[in-house]
Image (cartoon, rainbow, N blue to C red):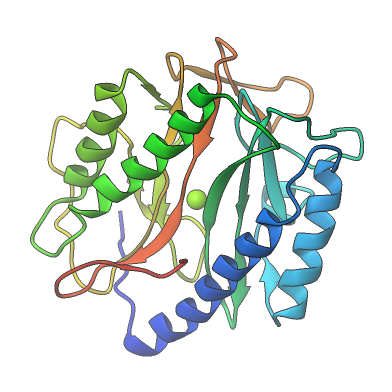
Length: 250
Ligand code: MG
């Protein structure tokens, strides 16, 4: 495993990719309504990313056909935008996207409600976001990586939710996915020591049910909960500093 530490100059470039991603998510949020297709969201995302002077990093990644993953209800991640997929009142939708600026990557996800959603769905979205914040409370130099993992997983399970174990967060920088893998549940060992200059994509994926998932056999991409329970996803690219972590993609 090789975990890279970024220089101030490199972090500056990542900061641009990440701030633009935050703006992208704010703009996409305003599009979410019953009746919009997931393809329309993707088209707009690509226009915005390009207009920012950036390149979508999802598009073409291992053949993924779009600039944003749009995952609805029991879909956890990697939903492929489609003209046939129309968002309905009461759905929850996760948008996961990222971009490259001068060779440096950003990655981040949000989950939104479509129209009026149930109290249960709202609570799942809220706790998933809280899991991220519980995780990054531990993202300080001198702590170990899996303290983040444990904090995320324990917050989810203490609310009766299931953690998606088959998907993980990751280091990020010159590539979208770098070492280390960042689990969303406690590990037996403590993991690497965190150091200033590490950039990490921390991304709890939390299900109302067990958290067990399966990949769509036809498209090979879409990941769904096996029990078809709702799933939420919240992700930011963060920087380990000398003290508090900096959330780059907010
Ligand atoms: Mg990610």
